Amino acid sequence: MGTCGYSVTAMRPAILFPLFAEIRILSGVGPKLEKLIAKVAGPRLVDLVFDLPVGVVDRSYRPKLAAAEPGRIATVEVTVLEHRPNRVKAQPYKVMVSDETSLMELVFFRAHADYLTGLLPVGARRLLSGRIERFKDRLQMAHPDYVVALQEASSFPLHEPVYGLTEGLTARPMAKAVRGALEKLPAMPEWQDPAFVKQRKWQDFGAALEIAHGPAHDSDLEPTTPARQRLAYDELLANQLALLLIRANLRGGKGRAVSGTGKLKALAVAALPFALTDPQLAALAEIEQDMKSDKRMLRLLQGDVGSGKTVVALLAMLSAVEAGLQAALMAPTELLVRQHLASLEPYANAAGVRLACLTGREKGAARDTILAKLAAGEIDILIGTHALFSEDVTFKDLGLAVVDEQHRFGVHQRMQLQSKGKPADVLVMTATPIPRTLALTAYGDMDVSKITGRPPGRKPVETRVMNAERLEELVPVRYGRMLQSPLAFYRGSAAGLTSVDTPLGSDVSLEEFGAAVANAGDVDGDGYADVLIGHPGYGANRGRVELYRGGPGGIPGPADYVFESQDDGARFGASVATLGDINADGYADFAVGAPYDSTADRPSASSSNVCPNRRATRRSSSAGWCFTNSMAR
Image (cartoon, rainbow, N blue to C red; front, side, top):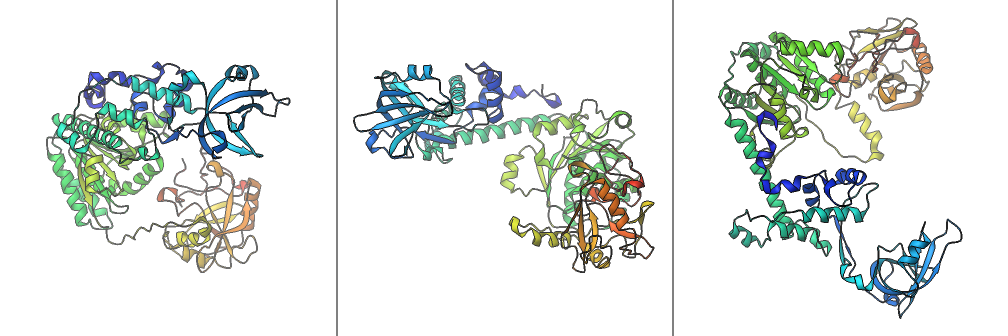
């Protein structure tokens, strides 16, 4: 049974049921092979049917040995002359063969003599296929792909499809599994308009699959071939029909009209440091119009990074809260969840709305408290990751579900989140530019709203592709133009680190900071002030600290001096105790954290002794340093 009370199999005709069986039913597919095939194609027969070849091996080249082109795959008819077993294990086992024009050497490594003498008995005629090479003026074929008796030549494949593989999976078992799946394909009536099929010169569905899986030349792999065009058209049509069925189901059921008073929205808008743009207001009007309808809303909100989608989503969620309902905002990563929490919290507080977040990090009593408040209606807006899908997450009355980074979640996941409420409305957001025709194709189950332009004061997003050799050019650009985040300053002494205010203010560009600390805090004696940046004590790079040089031009790049241990950290704390004194208080000041990554990664100046590590340990000042980061718990 699917989400929202809708059965996924209800859309599937019974004639197709055999194709949705597990691949383990195929002959020769055991547990180990099943896992390997599922890794590259999928777990069901239908996945194998649609796993089309990525190449073709042409074995139709049948020269005499004397005329064979080295480096080319050839099929030759030969007589077995002699076996030359290897005397040393590291040496190959060789078999001499010939036709009426020349000799050739077959080479086998790690071979079993009994097997080879049975496969290639002296005096027998055999049909071989493989790549012929020339080695020391003699023809050679290493490990022939095929060795068959002449009477079995009719079963020999002159053209062999090549499928995608993975480590441990070879070509023969994969091809055999695909062929087995194709044999399970039932005969089906034509579902396309006959005149349309005739006009396109298409085969029926089954014939198209057989042709696609039986290429003879590389040109047969092109997407423009009639067989592959037919399959692609059927796939897109089936996708659109499925979306229409889902949309009819989601919208067909009676929803509920959600109409807010506007009071909470007005408080939030009044707290904004900018005025909403006309495109934002237009998108919000479309969303609220849908919410006021007694039909369920399914709307895609599209806009560039920085266009103001999140604030529009917040105002839509406040409409649900004004109506006495709850709202949820789901993002694909914990980092994005924390960013949303940090950016929305001031406006939620201004509106008097209860905001909380739920990710995989919340465990034990903290998680239980959040779930209890959510079920009791004591949380108005919940922000979270996939954790919102958990069965134990229960809303008192979910009215609106918002999904950020739409492309990370599928239709069924949206439906699953929506099912957390009664007939909850759904708003999904994406920053990916989607042309209208593609939006209708990929998101045909939704209406689309677009936010064009940016709020006043937003800086343009720069996208550049640069060679790795130009990294030194990239660093000043990244630290200079693109990054002007607030910095937290600390003073270092024997007593530890303490956050301080500076004459530079709370929002200072890295160029300004670099100029301010020039000629001070020179730990490694290179004539530049050193700035501590990063997360020592957190994650894979725990204990590693890089020093950056500060100068009038900004921060051009890391110095050579790198601390690698806690002892080095203690020495660093002592080294800067009387250097780099920006605010003339007798202590050295330096930046901590990664202000260039995101607001969630910025160090917080509210606490001076919280170390950002996964176990939330608190280090004493004798360790030499302790860092503050808003991600620390």
